[in-house]
Each structure stands twice: as C-alpha cells, then as structure tokens.
Length: 246
Image (cartoon, rainbow, N blue to C red; front, side):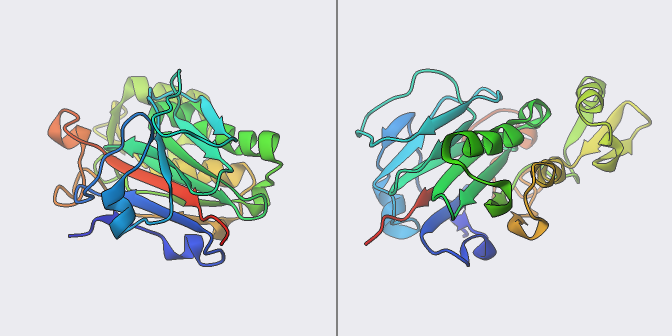
C-alpha cells in the first residue's frame, strides 16, 4: 500500500520543505481550521506543527496565512487555494478527481496548495495563486516550482458541451488539451496538462513543473474518485509545509 506520493525532483534542490499527495491508504484526515494530525506526523510527514484545511467550493479565492496560528482556529469564507510563509504549517487541499497543485518559492520561502477542478481551472485559480504569491510576497514566477498531483486523467475524464463551451471561451487553444469523443458532444479532458500550460503561461520554467501522471478514476485500489463512485465517500489530502530552521 502506498500511503502518500511525492515528487523527488520537487524538493531535491531545497530540503527545507515537505510535501505529499494523499492516497486512499493515507491513514489521516484533516478538519476545517487549524489542527494537528499525529498519525501523519509520526509516519510520513513529521515536520508541521499544524495543518490548515478550509471549505472548498470550486472557486478561485486565495487565503493567505502570514501570521502565527492557534490550534482550533478557523477561517470564515470559502477558499480553494492557501498560501503561507509560516514555518511548520502545512497548507492542505482535499480532492477526489480534481487536481491538487503545490507551489514553492525557495527564494521568498513561501508555499501554496491549490484545489483545481475544471471550474477552478477555467477561472484561473492557478495563475491567480501565482499572482497572489507575487503580490503578497514578491515571488517571481521564474523562481517558483510546481507539483501537479493525481487527478482524473485524459483516459477517463469525459466532459460534455456545457463544459466544452466554457473551455473554448477561456482557452482559444482548447483543442490542444481536449481529445474528441462521440463527435462534438463529448470529449476527454486532460486537466493536468491544462494546469501545466497555465503554469508555463504564468512564467514558470518547464523544468520547474513536476506532474504525477496517475488517474484517480481508473486506479480504484489507490484513489478515491467522485466520477467512479458517483458520490464523495472520502477524499485524499495533499499538502505542503516549510520546514522550520533548526
């Protein structure tokens, strides 16, 4: 059983961050607000003193956490991206087909976690998070690294005309990331590739983007999937944290 997935190249140049993409075998959950997850800390992710989780709504709002936290603290509002410069604090997102995206600026020492479904991608949540990193912390896109986690893949993620029309409006090159099926009415969406292209379009270097090419729909032994199961039974938790200086 594989409890978490990591991208070695994402942290190879800077061991002062810790990150993970959860699977259905991850023996932990997070509650909304600030909490501790002892089982995870003791096994795969010992660094954080606190984990932050918020209400996600497939939107594009970004929460910035730039001050110390108290256990049990909550955050009013609905957020699909979280940024922090606080060492020992893991920002997390929950997914069950949507794309978990982790960002790290080793220069400004700041990290971010993003929940990106097709609505969030069309709304530009990844570019908006990158812009927020620049606006609040002075992060330059060329310094950022991005890790794109497991999600519904182009092998299984079928979308219909209402989704396609939104994608056409937002992305003139939509045909580069969507493969037709059943004429013009159905298509298979490569959401991870779309998000990777958004990162490149925001100024990230190609070699700074890592992708986990694993489909949550067609790997039931490893992932939860809303599309496959028809409901959200459980979700996977993914997160990233700055390692405190010793």
